[in-house]
Image (cartoon, rainbow over all chains, first blue to last red; front, side, top):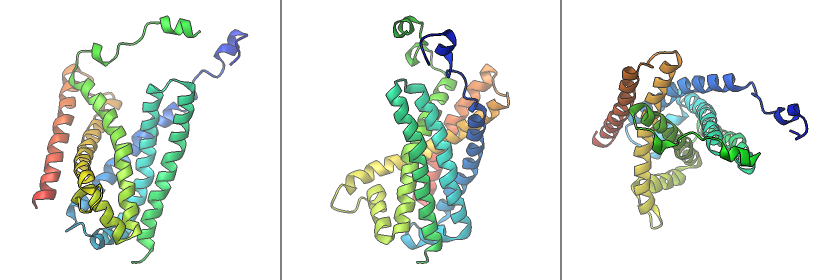
Length: 127
Length: 141
């Protein structure tokens, strides 16, 4: 991005050619979330009570475990993309953009890893 | 360069436009989405982490978010917790309904002024009714 030539002033300012993939992944994970979160809400509503043993026993079963692991991956992917779009709209300073880029590319992965690990602890950890 | 940018015409912001259902639903979609992303997923991690960590952690999660038992900040945070939990269920229903509306708009349908308005209003009605039904089922059973 030099200041000298006309081409130098616009180089690097075009499309990244990743928009379609971003758009489509947002929709795919949206449909996934509709199924997964509906499953989570209905399952939780049908639990007889919310005591530790009841809830943990439910999470430890195979289908809920798999659903929760998928939820950790799918919701954080979807949230990451949505938050990214929001930040792109509102953050204009160069420093802010770097901070936003770090936030969007680190926090969701750490969070999802923690979530998946927690489900695995419950599913495979016995008591 | 910066001088030239300042002088350029800027897009009118929220207070300029006349409010309509489609505008409200669009804004709600972003607000609820980001609320779910930060508060919703944060609580989800707290819940699953506490559940994985053992009975004491799970009880502590319940005390802070719902029961209010304890001699620390729990009585205060439990009030906040109820508001946030009920708010999050509404946010999910609103975001889901508005998201389905977006999926339909994506295939090119529903752009006629009247249909667009009607479906916007329906998402708002749906989220309110679904939230009431969910908590009625949960608290009154």
